[in-house]
Image (cartoon, rainbow, N blue to C red; front, side, top):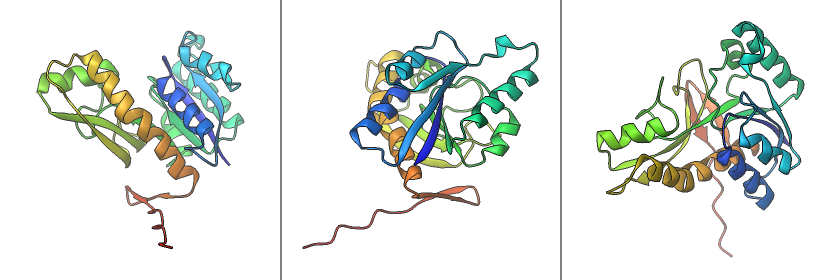
Length: 215
């Protein structure tokens, strides 16, 4: 059983998608051990508690120095002995020590088709604002492993979403969530939980499901 820690900062819609997928059996061999937020008011914490999942807040504001926060955050995460860390709208830069300790064991969901509209400053609604400004016809979402860069780790899954005439950033954000993010994040977790994902030389390889035999 793959033990997950889900890190969140806001409403937690991707967390909810993952909880629902586990409940329905769309994600197998995985369980969420803890949900951690940097924001004490994150609704995602309520989603976790409502589902009987341990939820806690560790904020940089609770510490005098960032190094103290980084150390406490990593110690707390390690205490749960999780196999995979899922960043589901987590707006805190992870310390390098954590990325190294959890190499190829941290995944992130980003609301664009990386390498478009990603990197420093591209998060939340800003991603969709920039996509509309650029006039792209197709956008989407990406699940990738986390490395020391910003949105630069090996890509696991991507899903495209149509940009429609008259879209506002909010409309596009919602469509990307519904059609891409809430689909590929659970799918990626399921693949990892069932040993279908490997990383070699900075690239992700996914083991194909065996074709069904004809009777």
